[in-house]
Length: 184
Image (cartoon, helix red, strand yellow):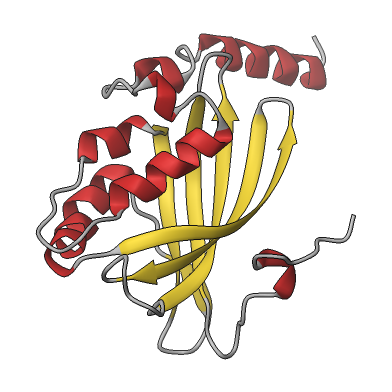
């Protein structure tokens, strides 16, 4: 067998030797209504993290929305001024950020979305506003959640959420705000 064919056979063996898709190994069963559509799963993500101070979040519901191996990644700036991302798991988010959300109150609301889908994958640019109380007249922060999703044939899964908060240096473009126009 030549080297190329040997490599292809080895790759095929490795791929087919992998365990079943991770989505079948989810430890927290999801409410079918939360994962039946892209709208439903994104609504559930925002609902779970939002609430007034003192309101306990349903972290099992949160975990049920994510595929095993999923990540959440806020953009971060190094002391040298370079941009990067901090990678955390849904469990780490619930364990570390969850307490702060519950102590301080936090409401994140989607104000616009641009979604693209191809086959079983989808990407949503979900523009958000954050408030301490839902009734606060002005948000204390805005930004964009870049959310990657997978449809496994029975339900939607969040694969990753990567977000960047708006700043003077990086204002949200009009096409990602309510009433914005995305050329196409």
